[in-house]
Amino acid sequence: VIHRVLENPRTGLVHARLIAAHHQNPVGLGALATRPAFLGDRDVQRLLLRNTQSSEALVRRLLGSRRLLQIYDSCKSHELPERHRQTARSVLKVRFTSASPEERVDLILTSQGRVLGALSGLALDGRSVALICGRGIRSTLLVENLARWPATPPSLIAYLLKHPLVRQAPALKLLLDRHPNRPRSAS
Image (cartoon, rainbow, N blue to C red; front, side, top):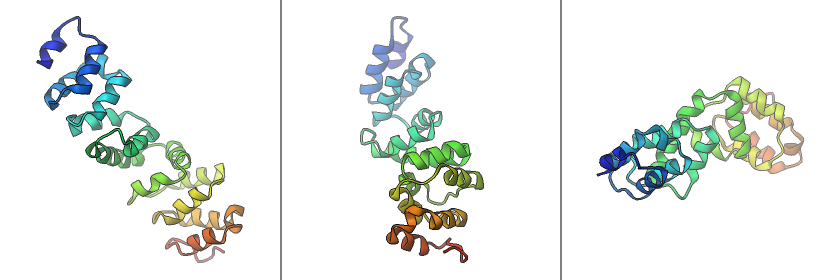
């Protein structure tokens, strides 16, 4: 039925949004996604992500072209079914490894490190660490999340241990002192 509706030249965005919101068959939703004019619409994308019948391949396709922060927002969105949030988490991990250091740092700083829990098993490169240190740390929550993340590099821990925010908060210093990557020379 959806294939026939989409063949109609009078079918517009209103129809595409209704299909994305209410259609209960992954084949029909996939047919909708083959039309670039409809798939480019933000409302159609949002409704497809909310639809429990959207396939994993379609969800990956929708999220694959987004920025890291938008993918992270999808990971924690209560509007998406749990299955789609899990797919978003796996897309986030893949995209994080291929993203630019600037985009990675922007995600970490914007989320105040909350994203680090979803990035287990990944590491930061030297450029990302340098950008974090260069932008400055103003949030105790960010320091806490970095201190709890097992992959925090030793150079970042050493920087944080010298930071005035940490020196004024004994609990943060204790968290960083207990980190497995803490360099021996740091004080």
